[in-house]
Structures are given as structure tokens and as C-alpha cells.
Image (tube, rainbow, N blue to C red; front, side):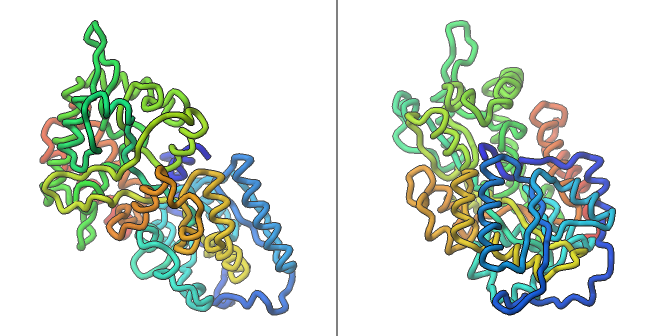
Length: 449
């Protein structure tokens, strides 16, 4: 799939409202909270698996694995239903007829689904199946699949984000090494900027605006030594001065190019972030922040393109660790309302821990496998373009922000503020940060955090 797994579906405002009230239905207390013994005799059972995946090659990868699963365990049949998003799942739950397993493109609703009882806590099943999550899944995945003491979901492929750069443009500008700090990135971006004879911009060094492509993940803390939420569960925007420093860096580059020019860039290239018209490939940008799937896009659209990939630079003077980055990905849930929890968990377990399946699907959609075993066996892990993403994913400092019962609403609120600031609608950074922090804290409080 030539796009971010975390952006494949969107929950609309109406969907978010629905999610807020969705709870599990039906009595399932008689079902044992333990894993089954797959080799024992079992009554024939059919479980339903929904997923956001929908492209033919994605569906084929799932169907092949599920067919093999049925061949090995004839008592288990999986009804596979593609092209379902979080809103569709919430509606099914509210109607009392959820799928047994749901695979979502985004982890933002993990805590919400866990808090309101939509999904089952997987901890007892994992313990019974003798699956040690800490030894099975890289720590970055556990940040966005857990809420409080509950294992609310399991990871199934992930995204990592890094800096792509045009090697020929670097050489022409006399730049001999990739930047490691945001100050170095700014200096390089200005050196790499090329103007036409009429003064218009031919090549942008780097465009940081938060609504372009995946730039929003520059602003969740991994690259600025900040935590979105503190230990008390409240936002740190007002208390941590590094947020103001990050916004100042962002605004400096936007001011350098001009707000109107940046707006034109976003308007022109946002529709082409994942095709041959991408600004890095077309020469309109010398550097860009993007996910690992872009490696696959480049191999398809412009295989001779000479480029490098390095970790995203970090804020100067921060505690941010260069080499780490933002990581988040697909998650798989066991519905609390499932009538076949043991069998459904067994299917979920196979999809999230089977090395062959994970690596086949990763190759199909250009994402990163999500178990230590799959990563070790993956034939792309040492490729010069893929290795930086694997290293970022395995870095113990890489993570996403903590998930909360507010679901995607905290990020939606944060993104709206960032864009208002970048477009000059919010003038004072400190005041704006304090205000948006209070809004998000209120959202979390109202949702039960």
C-alpha cells in the first residue's frame, strides 16, 4: 500500500461522536479468559475479522495466510471483511453485532475503546498463551497498544518517520553530511533553496508546515525532547519551554519562504505526497519528512533517484535523542462482544505474531514488521534505505504520544492549533500553547481520564 497505514482511514466528526458512546453489548462472562490449546479437539467455529485494508494485494496476503490457518486447523474458519474503518466498527458495536477481531489503521482510539469496554483486555489471553509482550514486540508498539494496565490491542505492522534528502542537491550546495539538529536543518534548507529568475521559488530546502503530508508527527515530542503528556496525564505545552522553541523553529522556516509561498506549496503538492508528483521526486523540495512506505513509492515511481534517509534532526539543546523518532501503526483488537473470544484471539495471535505473514504483508504494503522475530528475519532490514527506519523503530526512545480516552480528538485539537499558529491566526505562542493545552486536558477529563 503506497500510503501511511495510519492515514488510510479517517474518523469523521460524526464518527468520533459515535465512538464516544460505543460500548460492548451482550453477556460474555461465561467465556474463559484464556487461550485455547490449538492442537486439541475443537468444535467447528467461524470468526469474523474486519480490517481497514482494501487493496487487492493486501487482501490477497490476508486471505493466503487465513487459508493456511484453516488448512492447519480445520476447525477454525475466518470470515475476512476488508475496507472497514473505526466508524464502521463503532456502529457495529453499538448495534450489538461487532466482528470478533477488528484491525484499525490508527492507534488513536485504543484507549477510548479500552476505557468504554468496546474491546477486551488481551492480558489474560497473552499470559495463558505464554506470550511475553516485552520479548515479542518492540517497546515503541506497546506505547500505543496499552492503556493503564490493560493490553488493549496488538500491533500489526508499523510506520516510522525519517528525513529523506536529495544527494545530488546536497553535493551541489556543498553540504557533506546530513543535519542532526533542527538548526542545522534550517541552515541546510536555506542553502538548498533555489529561486527562479523572477524571484519565485524553484526548489524548497524543507517545508515544515504541520498539515503537509505527515509533518504533524514532527510535533508530538519525539524530535524535541518533549512529552505530549506529563506523568500526571496532563499536557506539557504550557510548562515545557521546548514546545515554544519547536514552534519558533517551524515559524522561522515558514517566514523565510513566506506564508503565501508555503500555502501554495502545500496546496500544490499535498495531493501528490504519495505519487510521482511528490516534490522530492520532482525536484521541488530537497528534503522531506516521510514514512517508510515512501521507499517503496520511490522504487516504483523513480527507481534511479539518488537519495538518502537519516533520522529526523532533533531540537537543539533538548533532551531529544538523535536516532529516535515517531513510530505508530496498525492495531488489532479483540471485541469485548465477541461470542468466540478464545478462537478469535487465536486468529488475532496468528496475524500479529506469525513471522512469514508479517514479512509478506510488510513487503506488500511497504511497512515495517512488528515483532522482534519478524524484524530479525526480514530481508530488507539491512537495505540502506530501509535500515534507518528499522533502527528508528527499534530505538528505545522512539514512541508515539500516550493514547487517552479522548481518542483522536486530542490530536485533532492540537493540529488545528498548529495550523492556526502557522497561518498567523494565533499570534502569541505561549498563550496559544496554554490555551490548547487546557482544551485537550478538558477533553481528556470529560472522556474519563
